[in-house]
Image 1: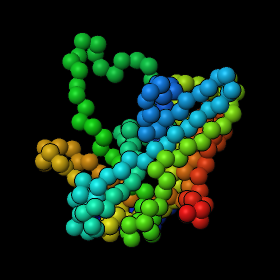
Image 2: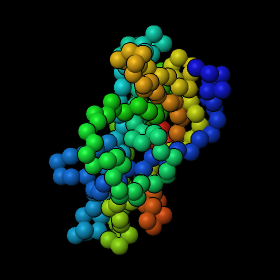
Image 3: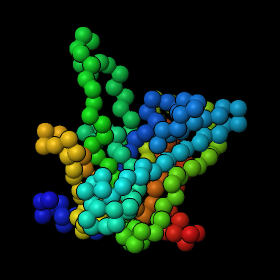
Image 4: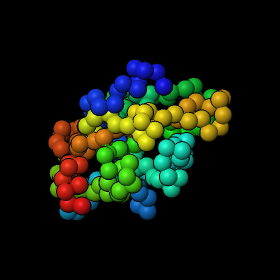
Length: 207
């Protein structure tokens, strides 16, 4: 890893992850980042579920016990710097182009804290919130934004970033960035209201 990247550990960060851009989660399905709205009671439900990886999936088994798990989130559109859902509605390619099979996710955020290295469960598996919201304050095409704030952390090997190529050198790298969050919050981009907020310090004290 380049020295400039290795020196990022400890620096402050703020990251926006847009989600729910295609509308509410369909019945019977629960995407990792999703929202639903019950118009009858004007209730908005936000669901943020963490993905769980084995340390061996990131070639970190030598640094920790092989059974060690890392929790975090995939960044769905890592090529975009937009902090909200895209409002582009046109065709991205010619209409007669052959479909392309996407290789899967390529950028992940690992939520790391001081207790993680000892194997202690630090975060709840899911962050849920329910809030009353008027219908005119929702726009299904705008979705919501999950904000993460805190400091760049270190993975068990001491580095802030880990990249792997499971299919070999011809595959684009899949990278895991270690972040030690202090706060997670969900904002409604239409009203700019904070829908939900979780303080990591409060979560630790409750445990």
